[in-house]
Amino acid sequence: GTKSERYRPQYHFTPKAHWMNDPNGMVYYKGTYHLFYQYYPGGTVWGPMHWGHTTSKDMVHWQEKPIALYPDSLGYIFSGSAVVDVHNTSGFGKNGQVPLVAIFTHHNPKLEKLKSDKIQYQSLAYSLDDGKTWTKYAGNPVLPNPGISDFRDPKVRWYEAQKKWIMTLATKDHITFYSSPNLKSWSKESEFGRDAGAHGGVWECPDLIPLNHNGKTVWVLIANINPGGPNGGSAAQYFVGDFDGKNFRAYSKKTKWMDYGADNYAGVTFSNTGNRTILMGWMSNWQYATVVPTVAWRSATTVPRELGLKEVGKELLLTSKPIKELNTLNEQSFSLKNLAVKDSYDLTAKTKNNTGLFKLELSTQNTDDFSIVLANEQGNEVLIGYDKSANQYYIDRSHSGKVDFEKGFGKRHTAPRFPSDKTISLTLMVDVASVELFADSGLTIMTDIFFPEKPLNKLFIKSTTGISIPNLTYTRLASSVL
Ligand code: FRU
Figure 1 (cartoon, rainbow, N blue to C red):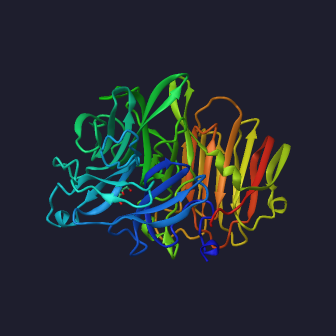
Figure 2: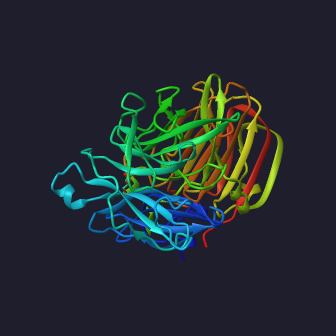
Figure 3: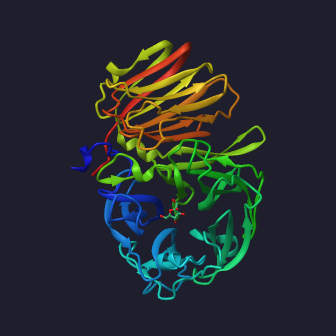
């Protein structure tokens, strides 16, 4: 079965078979979380895109559903979002049934062959059965292409202050904002980003998110970029600023990175989750996504993360934390107090873990070098650590097992540490083929995948200089594969 397949993630969503990339149309409605995703049911590499569909009551246990959207005469179904049209502004609602509306990019392969630059445009589909089945709007496309080759990934949200919809769209090297009263007719409001942020690649999959900071609304603009990430390939940059229904003004034009690992791309947030802001990303990277050594399927999503803001010095930074619902996976757990680690401390016997799934939380009292090492008898290892002289966290997957499917895969990735205090606190979420590092209350995040020859069932804490750990908690996690 799928549960015991080699490299099959046990608590990250994966399709049973075939290719997946970006999460799409994430929306919460009537107690159910819907996750759609870029899906090619005809193979394990990228192909004509569909929207796959899976649902969950807790964002942890997912049940795969029939494909929601198929390619049609207007093209493949590229990335996009979904909203609950409570006021039936679209008019799609019938007999009081609230419509769920998906706003996605149609990508036209026929026009692409003809070398047209108008190959991408935005279209709608709606559901009148709470997300089960979807009907494409007969008036598609609703936003034609103005002559920009990369014109895609609409993320739509209701802007209550002006009672209108705002679409955040990736338009090559910048973001364009549009607004609409009814999701069907769109007017351009403004642009952002030609003179801001990183430009090592094309901007894709944006999101514009209001977050509460000391009672004030601060807006975060996520603009995924590929390539040009801090550790190579695909990555998620963000800007913090204000939005007034027309313009987004960033407090700083300098790029910030939501995740410094190599494997959190195209992440966007769920619609309709009230005060919570929850993001999931695609846990892969265009550098090697199509050649990773899984057989039946390719790619997984990251764990869902709750987003927030935190002041560091004069800056406001985005924080990401694993959602609390993940605690439903908690199994046996133990804590160690006042642990002095010199050289190497072997946790293997205590953990007796052959599933490879666990959460490790620890805090250190000083900020000397240390690493957490996931290893096996075969000599494969993944190191997650802190380098004091560089004031950096790192994940090193150079010797993590299968690395030679792509020359850039077997590398050490680094990330800055932001706070200046001496206490490091971090949480690691480890699955069969991935690790997600959440450091300093979610200020530094690193997500990396790996493919060891055998499960990484050994666990060490290492420090040549020596560190003191006031508290370490290890929790084995259950599989959520149904
Ligand atoms: C990002 C992306 C999107 C596009 C989709 C196509 O990974 O390139 O910009 O809509 O994938 O599958």
